[in-house]
Every structure is written in structure tokens, then in C-alpha cells.
Amino acid sequence: MLAGKWIGRAGQFGGGPAPGPPDPSAAEMQVQESWASAAPAIAAALPDLCFLIGPDLRFAACNRPGHADLHAPWATLRGRPLHSIGPPDLARRTIAACGSGPQRLNYALRTASGRLARFEASIVPLPGSGTGWLYIARDVSAQAALDAEQARYARAMQGVADGLWEWDIATGSEYFSPRALALLGHPGSLAAQLQADDQGLWRAALQSHLQHGAPLDIDLRLAGATLRWLRCSGWTERDALGQPARVLATLSDVTTSKFTEQALSDSQAKFRALFHTVPVGIAVIDIASETVIEANDELGRLLDWPTPSVAGLTAATLGLTPLPGMAGRTEVDHRELRPVSGARLHAKLVAEPMELAGRPLLLCVVVDITVQVDAEAALSALAEQLMDQERRTTQRLAQALHDQLGQTLTALRLTLDLEASSARDQARGLTDQALREVRQALVDLRPPLLEDEGLAAALDNELAQRRALHPGVRLALDAEAELLEQRWPAPVEYALFMIAREGLENALRHASPTEVRLSLYGFADEVELGVADDGSGLASGFERRPGHFGLIGMRERARAIGATLALGPREQGGTQLTLRWRMPQ
Image 1: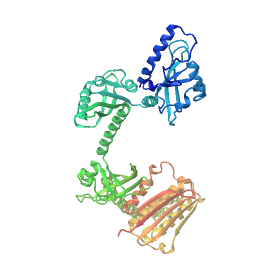
Image 2: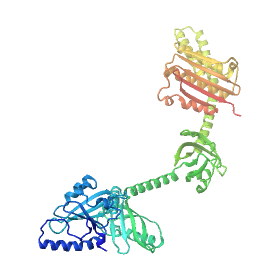
Image 3: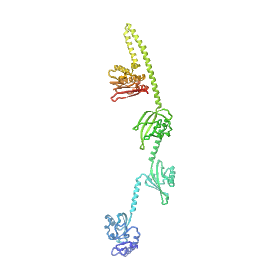
Image 4: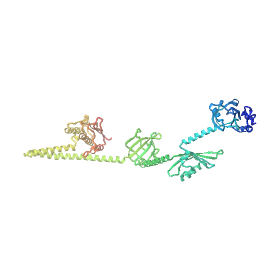
């Protein structure tokens, strides 16, 4: 039966001597006969394809003539020379391997079934001189695929930053990939390379994973002088009975991310401490719903709401609506809020839009300016009282100068006119000078025409006196005809006149203008005063010039009567001062 599987040109291998030298020795004949008798059994025992190649380099026999991995049907291969079979390069390599010693070949060949297979061939000369060769071809396609897969896996493991750890539960052995060894620094048990405090954590996590199926994902500290963190993320492979067989885990160096997380955590803690301790109220508001999503302690204190309950309330409930603009940083100088207690809260709002995880938010800061507003109101009241006292004092002084000193000096002049002496002319000159000074003092202390003829007439008279002192400057008053006789409350007229006089003096003294124009517009219940010049603009330190109210004084005068004052550059050059007053309702 075995002999029937070794088919050659003579039918059954061993049925006759293979072609060879014409006169072999007796010993050689004996060896050949022994080999021939054993060959069928050997060929039948081999799972691989076996061929006999004769001394003439032709295929002589095959142990599996019907095998699917033959290059062609055996009937077409039998007796053919090696150089005529297969690719030329393979034929040349096969012929070269048929030498005096064993040889190996590795090659790929498409079989008769159309499959491209990889073979590893062993070519061994048969015993005896010139008897031929034994050609054994093993299909290594599966092994080659496995080797290629392992090579790809090895390259992948080298290319990733993570290491691989494997624990065989049955044997207790641990495997570390090259990358894992590089991360750990030296071989040894994984637990032994952890800090003492973390060894127990690792064993507990491993036990919980094996017994209860808990996820195996833990950050551990490696032993050593330098703190390093290792993240272990693992899974379990089970045997056919469902019992844990191996635990595998990826090892990642997360030292940098740990330090980053710690720094971020510290920064967040500092921010939160600052957020809740700053002396201003802060609210983070969702723009879409106008709902507060977070607030600090100070905002709750200002609005009399417990801080934890502020989150979730609408801005309208807290009295923060309407919200400031969303286009950029916005400031609302004054907003009156009503806390839960009903007390009055004056606040300044500063809002800036922001975005968090794609969600549009508004950061709103509430600054309590109640003390400032109350102080300004008290200061305005005080300034109003002082100006009223100034006005009354000025009137009394003017009355005294006019009725007493003025009359005395006049009498002195009349008396001197009656005396004829050399000192008479000199005395008359001194007396005239005294009278001029008194009149000028009256002008400075009591605006001429203001009480009798009104604001427009007083301003026009002021300009007339200034023209004599500044002949090179055009001074003009723009006022509608009906305003020439319009009267406003005395404190309002006095404040407007004094502010106009101060603005006019500032322009003439510091701006070197060629023209200064006063303007007066309005009705019985409102008025607008303007001082415009084409000079060099406001001088540095204007508000703090000694001996003058400056801008601060003008603002206080305006505040005392409830008016607004604006001072700034003109588009065409120079300075524009504008005061607006409206009668309170």
C-alpha cells in the first residue's frame, strides 16, 4: 500500500534500479537497494510533497501525485527536466541546489488550483554516487502570514508610546513589551516598581477587576527619586471555562499630564477663591435664557439672596435686566437695583461676552457705588448751599461797596474840587482810579444786568467788556431773539453765567483763539449753553490751575443745579463746552 503512493516513471518506486553508473560496486548496490526498500515508507510518513529527482535532473517520482499544491498535474510533470518547470528563476535555483550536500530553498509558486503559496524546500542527495536527489516541499504560507502579522505587531508596538504588560495568572509570569521596559526603566514585577503606597492600590484594583469586573484603569506612581506617573488600562482574557487566564494592560507615561492637571487644579482653586472673595458681585449668565449659571458670594450679599440659590435665577428676577450689550465689553455707569430687602442699591455694571464649550455666556460684574452716589449727592447739596451763600454774600458786598464806599469816594471828589491846591489833580486821579476799581469789583462779584435783564443780556455785556481787552479775537453771542427776555430760576442763571465766564476766560487765556462764540438755546423749562473756540485746545492741568474753579468747579456748579456738562475737542479744532439744564419734573 505504501509503495503504491510513491509513483515514478517505472510505476512503483523500487520496482527496478534507478538509472546510474553502469558498473556500481557491490557496496553501493547494497546501499541503493536498502534505500529503495525504505523510500516508500519514508515518503508515505511525510506530510509534505516529496519528489525523486534523477541524476539527469528530471522528476522521477512523487509521493502525492494528486496533491492540490502541485504546480501542474503530475502526469505532465513526470519525466520533465527541472529547467522546463515553473518560473525560470526558480528552475535555475533548483538546479543549483542539486549538488553534493543538503540545500534549502524558499519560494512562492502558484499551484494548479490557482493559490499563490509559499514553500520551504529541502534538497538532499540520495546515498550513493549519482543516484539523484530527494526534494521535500513544505507549504509555509500559514506560517509566513503569521510571521508577517507578528512583524507588523512588533512594528506597531515599537511605534506607539504605550507599553504592554501581560500577566499569566496560572504561572504568575509577567511579560513586558520593549516600550514597557523603557517606561519602567528595569525589569521586574510591576507591583515591585511602584511606590509603597501605590502597591496596595494596584493589588486592590487588580483584585476588584478579577472578582467583580470593575474597570482596570488606575494612575500609579513609580518608585524612584523623580516623581513619575504611570496609567494602567487593562482587560482580562478568559479560558474556555470562563475563568480568568491572562490580564493585559497598556502602560502610559502620564507624568506631564498629571503635572498639567495639578497646575490647572491649583489655578482653578485660586480662581475660585478669588471669585468668591473679590469685593464686587460677579454673575455668569447664559445669554440665550438670561439665566444665572454661577454667582459669587458678594453678589448674593449685595442682592440679599443666599449664594447657592442665585444660580438658576433669571437676570430679571435679580433686577439685572436689561442686560448690557453683547457686542463687546460694555459699562453701565449707573443702574439702580432693588435687593430683596427693599433697600436701594446704586451699582455700576461691567459686562463682557464670553464662550464656554460653544455656549455663549455673559460675564457681568456688579460694583456697589451706593456710598459714592450718596457722597456725590451730599457734595452737590453742599456745593449748592455754598454757591447760594456765595451769591448772597456777593450781593451784600456789592450793595455795601455801592452804597458806602462808592458814595464816600464821590463825596471826596466833590470836596477836592472845591480846594485849589497842587495836590488837587493828583487826588482827583486817585479818586477816579478808586471808583474804577470799585466798579470792576462790582462787575466781578455781581454779574452786571444778570438780575435785572437776564442771562442773555449779562452774557452779551460780558463779551462787550472782553472785546476791549482782546481786540484781536472775535467774540460773539448766538441767541434767539425770544431768549433775550427769557428768565430762568436765579440759581440756574447764576450758575450758567459763572460757567460761561470761566469757559470764556479759559479760552482767551490758554488757547490763543481767533474766535470764541457763546451760544444760548432753549425754552422756559430747559436751556443749553455753549462756549466754542478755535484755539489750541485744553491745556495740561487745566482742572488744577490755582485760583480758578477749573473743570471741577464748573462740574460742581452744573451738578448743583442738576445740569450736565461736557467738554471736549471740536472736529474743526479748538474746544467745545456744552451745558444742558432741564427743569425737574
